[in-house]
Image (cartoon, rainbow, N blue to C red):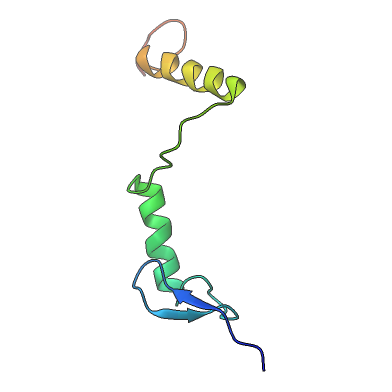
Length: 77
């Protein structure tokens, strides 16, 4: 008989079987909690960005944010 693979829910650490509907989470609630952590910035990807095109895009975003992001005129509306 094949052994079912399992792991622990990343949110609450309950054991979850690989065939579960909400895998790798134990429930929709834990899935939403995890999504909320990503959305709030509690989780970050710590590896450095090595793609030159992506780095250029990020620098452009940073420049726009530092200028206030209000276009060329600088008017705040």
